[in-house]
Length: 103
Image (cartoon, rainbow, N blue to C red; front, side, top):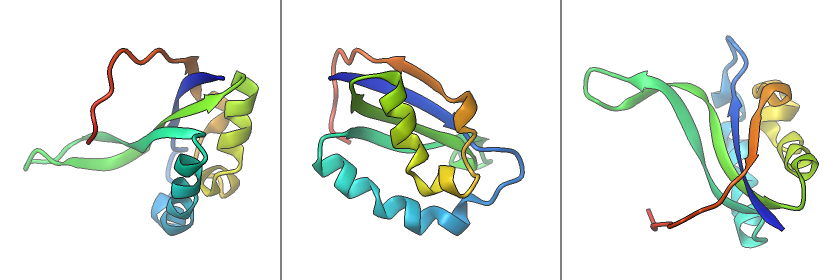
């Protein structure tokens, strides 16, 4: 098993907040199984107060045997199922973590 990093951008003009609750419900079981090692939103930039704004997509770290397994993992997510993520153009690479800090 290898750790993979995936950057999945949102498709243009989508409202990910409609499916956020459903999306977030799948995260704890994926962490508990060891399949998911990190996950979070990426943003278009910072507002005037220096806080992130404007969802751009997601970045996740997944333990899997192959790139195809990572794609299969992404395709189970409500953001893919409901047309939010541009999964076909996701950036997916094997990932070597040198150090990891707890948040």
